[in-house]
Image (cartoon, rainbow, N blue to C red; front, side):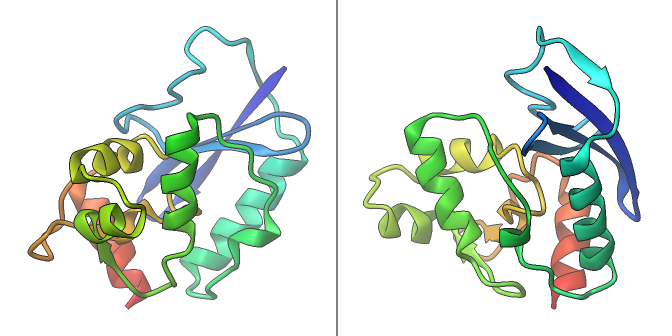
Length: 158
């Protein structure tokens, strides 16, 4: 069974998707790949413990308190390659950025586009900081939640 609740962030409504134990997804409502992989799943609109933990984490994040993702129980669904990329995203320090090309080099992947695809499908927006990945020239590209939100998240973290 999967559970959904919502969080009202300064950047718009966020859908939190969880099972009884872990946070599975954190999506801006309407973003690209919204709740991807759960389209036919039975989802109950009910708040469970992982939602409460995520909401407290988001409160701290938007207050500028630099919360550690490790305080959340995370269980994103994805391929082995996606998990490898998402782990690399999780290692990008608060307030710092990298590029798709740098991630490709770090992960010994010949395709920055493959990296970009995995980054774009990150189901744990903000917590797994895909917004910290920039284009080769430092441009704001490729954020499933929208470029305006990416810019706002980076501004919050500066």
